[in-house]
Image 1 (tube, rainbow, N blue to C red):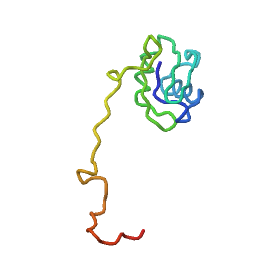
Image 2: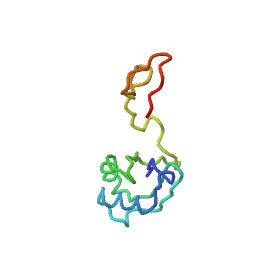
Image 3: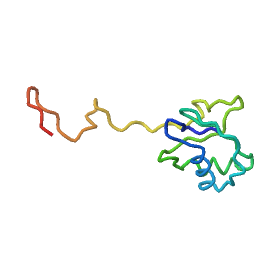
Image 4: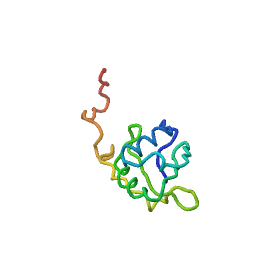
Length: 114
């Protein structure tokens, strides 16, 4: 299995085992070897629990972060871009005037003190 969170987020093996066992109801014995990298994690899982883990972990948070979980590719790599869920569009950019609550200041006007 592939998990889109790793050491940079502070993930530890116990966090992963706890999330999978508590959220998906999978026994700890069904979880195999865990390989935690800087930005992603690969772990073994008994085949009869894959569907439950994919379904339940899709909405789970690990270490306060929503994570992406998928079946790893046969070559041991992460899922391709087309297999990942699309991110929602960004709501508001500086060019469209969004992003701030204060009105724009006049040219030459002094800055407000905070």
